[in-house]
Image (cartoon, rainbow, N blue to C red; front, top):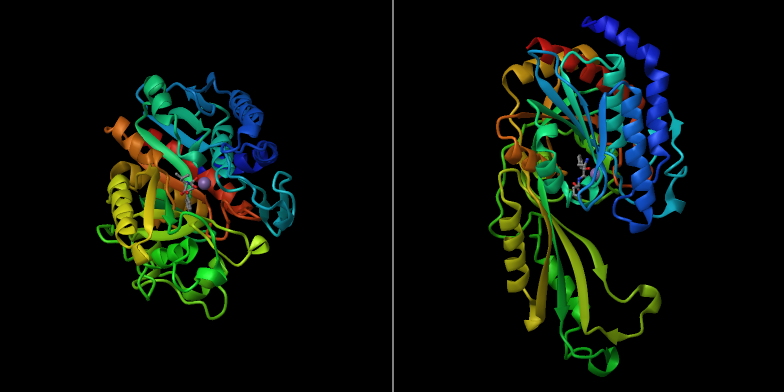
Length: 446
Ligand code: BES
Ligand code: MN
């Protein structure tokens, strides 16, 4: 059954069961960053394992190495055929303010062809695609398949190295298909060839050894919060370009992000200017980006005309493909330490780092993927960069240097991963599933 029309017809027939799997997973609150959700993480891993057994996988195990549980399922390779690893993650981000959701995040709801739920795209859609492709093959894929569903991607994969070391033989594959990026647009399949890395730090500014009345001494001593604001303001120039010295810029595909679409995808307010110079995709894919993602300071409600002695901010830096996340974090730290206003004491605590990644798209794998995506979507895939980060890609490249990686997507730019009202286009979900089923056929014949 390698004929694409036949696979498509079969996928249509089994689609209700694919949706059942997907909806069932979306009802589980698998938030890896919240210790109180540990039982839900276990339930989520066990559910994925059960679904894999249900699609005919003969060898399924839930594994953990001191962190969140992951699932490894293996379909042995038919003689003479390659093994393809299908990766996604079953953990999701916290919901944020529940009152802001149009419908509850763990009660998946369809509206206008999109499914709304936490994880709807990132990355439960990836799991649904893998399960659908295997169902389309009735559990007998034409290549060896290893399904690897990680449980802690959203917290930087702290125990992934240990899982990979312990289960290296189970995971070793000719091709890793990582379904966790974003398509260029709804209906436009996309292969991601460059991803930014990430690092962060907490910067603390101190100016006084105790708080003071702002009337008594304001005007002669700098308060910590104003000092912190001035320090953070040095991270960009007036045009919004990142002003941290020592950061690199990468090479990425060049596509034109239409401004009207960018407006719609981002929801930028009237009159607000775009940051920085250069093309939009160069700024979201090729260059570093710095954002202040949190501040510890007196809340407006409890303000009391006081000069604060200390203030703190968490600064996040997206690292260009081709740069090194540890070196980028060192550059950010140097910048913060050397730009203290008014002699304020600055203390920087390094946070996490995740490496950026360049993923070549070429040869037989690119031919197979081009053919599969074109058949499933009716248009050829485009190559894109990704402003977000999948740090485990660099770990896979290091652990399996002889293997190839294909970074695919189900999500689109309006999917709001990590945000309120995260959603997934259901038409693209089905096309992505068909593309992956077809990809297995093309790889079997390549
Ligand atoms: N699926 C995302 C990566 C992504 C983000 C793709 C934005 C496309 C657009 C992934 O699950 C993710 O969120 N990664 C984290 C990594 C971090 C926790 C180390 C990220 O980018 O913040
Ligand atoms: Mn994510």
